[in-house]
Length: 100
Image (cartoon, rainbow, N blue to C red; front, side, top):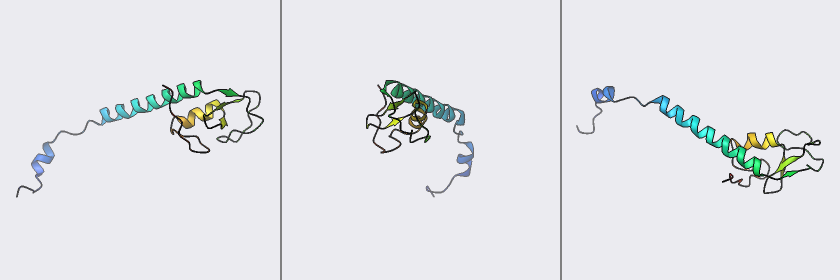
C-alpha cells in the first residue's frame, strides 16, 4: 500500500503561497513592459510615408511612426502596447528582440 493516497498527509501539506506567485507574475509583466518601452525607444522614427498603422488602422499624420527592424512602421504607442505582450512584428511576425 505504498502507492495509496494519504488523506492525512494531503490535509497537512502547506498551501502554495498564491501571493508569492501573483507577485512573481506582476514582476514578470513589469519587466516585459520595461523591455518593450526600451525597445520602442531605440527604434528609428520615420515619417510614416502617408500610410496607416496596421495596429489601429489610422494614418500617421505629422507624428510619423516607429520602424521595426523588418521595415514595418507603427504608431509608437501601438507598437509599444503590442510588444508589451508579444515579441514579434504585428504584420509579418518576425522576431523583435528586446533592447539590451
